[in-house]
Image (cartoon, rainbow, N blue to C red; front, side):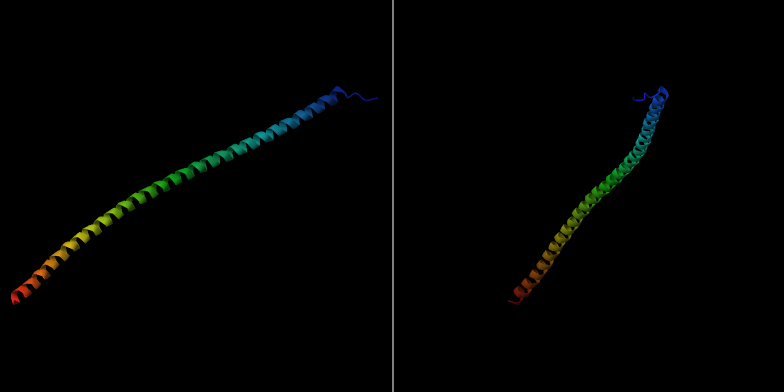
Length: 108
């Protein structure tokens, strides 16, 4: 014959199972809270990194723009120096040419 469990022992087993379930749920909730805090921390770090990257990209764009402008100014300055040198060479050439013409023309 099988023994029929008493109502008290059934209730105890049900209460034990309910306690185990509540313990598991409590641990799950604690883990969820821990994970939520980690996600919030990572979100803040990600936002901080995004701001830093944005600042670096902005600085890089400003540096590129100013270096291009400097390069254009330097090219403009070299072009002006070249033009002045051509004018000076023309003046010197004219002076030397006139001096040679006077020497050749005056001696004949």
